[in-house]
Each structure stands twice: as C-alpha cells, then as structure tokens.
Image (tube, rainbow, N blue to C red; front, side):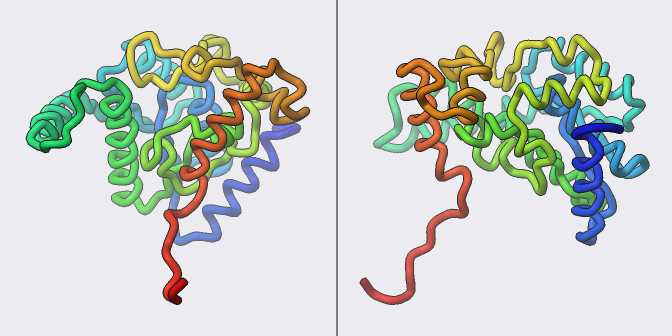
Length: 251
C-alpha cells in the first residue's frame, strides 16, 4: 500500500478499534465508491469485513459488477434481494397515502418511490451489522456529501465514511491504486435509483465541474453550474446536520 490507501486503512482500523465493534459491513452496489471502500475495509480488517449486495429492481449488470468486485478481492459477500419487500411496502404506502384528503395527485412520483430503495438497503445493512456486532461503512465521497447527493436515512445512514473527504476524481485515483477492476473504474457513476439513471445527468453538471467548484471556487465553472451547485448545497444542508431542537428557554 502506498500514497492514500495506507493512511485511510490505518484510520479505519483505529476507528473500529476505538469502538466495541468487531468488524465492518459494506453495501456493494457495483460502482467505484463501494468497491473502493470495500477494499480499504478489507485491507484494514482482513478477516472482519462482509460485503452485501442488495438488488432492488436494479439493473442486472450492477449485481454482476458487485459480484465481480467481491470475487476479485475474495471478499465474503451475501446477497439480499429486496424486490418483493419493495413491491409490498410501496403498494401499501401508495394505498394508505391515497386515503388522505390532502394526498398528492401523483402517487407514482418517481423520487419518493426511488428513495425507498436506499432506505431498505440501510435497514438491511444494519440488520447484518447488528447481528454480527459490526459497523456499517458508508460509501459516500466528498462530492456527494457536499451537495447532498444521497438519500437521507438511506445511503446517508452509516457509521463511518472512509472516502468522505475525497472528491470523485480522487476516488478514481485511489481505486486504481487499490487495483479495483478496470470496468468498475470506467463505469459511469449512477445511484441506481431507476433504470438508466446517471449521476451527472441528474445533477446537471459533471463531477469534474463540481471538483473545480469545490477546489477553486464558483468562478472556476460556468455561472449555470455554479448556481446549480450552490442550490443543491443549500438544499442538502439538512442532511449534514442533526435534526434541529428547540431551546427550553422561552424566546
């Protein structure tokens, strides 16, 4: 190990040693972030990491890519299929919500339904973690965390973020250092919330633009991208803080 991987694996090891946990659980999505985190965790705790593949009406290629990562690194991995759970829950949610007088006209709105998927995955990861006395290692990077590009209490519900201070391009460099399979490194980033979904299309700017904005300021990108990044950063602020609490003293 050289360069960035060694201090990160040391940090992971120290963090787990400082708790009463015995290891780490990592959700494997088939993307570069989860592959990188899984390998870092494995290097930090070689015999105490479990990968979990959590398909939920996902692209078959994503599960295949997740298995590629698990096999490549010889990482103990289980698969929990959430298709039926998602179908049952969302059917009940839509039916119950429709009984409210103020129910929205569109009960098939894509984003609320899509956000159920990462929340089901979070619940599943914590079941595995609690059963094994492990912690859940998150896979979010600095680019995503800054603009709130994750689901609150979904993929944002984790115990530690090993790559949380790395920009997306830095994650790619680290993935190469860790010998993550090339197809995973070159795969277009996607949250996998619906078929054909791609991060940069949904965000409205590229990860390269976001990196330039974060490193050099708004002047480093187009006015349109700067405005969009600022809007997402402000809108996602609630995801990066604890829920507000009122003071006990009167105003």
